[in-house]
Image 1 (spheres, rainbow, N blue to C red):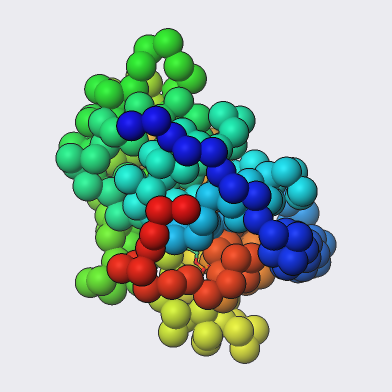
Image 2: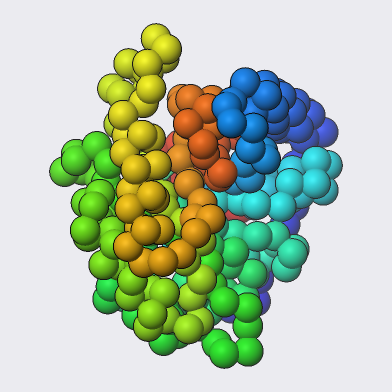
Length: 257
Ligand SMILES: *Cc1c(COP(=O)(O)O)cnc(C)c1O
């Protein structure tokens, strides 16, 4: 099916989006300045799930934003064909084996952040074209242990998936580890404590690097409610949605736009 052009956002919407993005980038800069040891600023992934393509185009054109995150494979495929090809897409939704091939065939997919099994890594690797850049992947780690969250257990499970990607997946690049912290812990950490889920991801990174013999793995952690704490604890990739785009509609109300 031919893709339709993306209608421009209204001037008011462009203004609202760019000012929300600037306020997030200012808060990121302040958190970066406060962190020890000094580390480069994290990448900001603007999470556009359930938001219209016109919002993505507005931030692309008016604010130079390039990294966007999506949770649903079909929505990502639809947006990717209609929007500029130098957008760097991140898949951050729960990963199903039967969707891996479709994902890996998006040329400007920058990273799949939610690899949580050897089998899914294999499927992504098998489907990725030799002629393209390696596909970056993050291993999702369930640091909070909540049943509702995907991800490998911190520790040996994370090591096993990492070893498989590094040793057996020539078309994948293991970029780092990702987690979604529990809301309760991000609230507790707001009182000045360390967020235990983020600390667990940092610890898992040390373990994986030592056991697999890699270094410089990234840490994808921090969302609208907790990105400043995540940055203070070493995040290199924050995923911020509602602080930029506003509250999301329930999924069933999503309409093609
Ligand atoms: C939706 C989502 C985000 C963004 O959440 P906000 O709270 O809106 O910033 C980040 N990461 C993942 C994995 C998500 O599913």
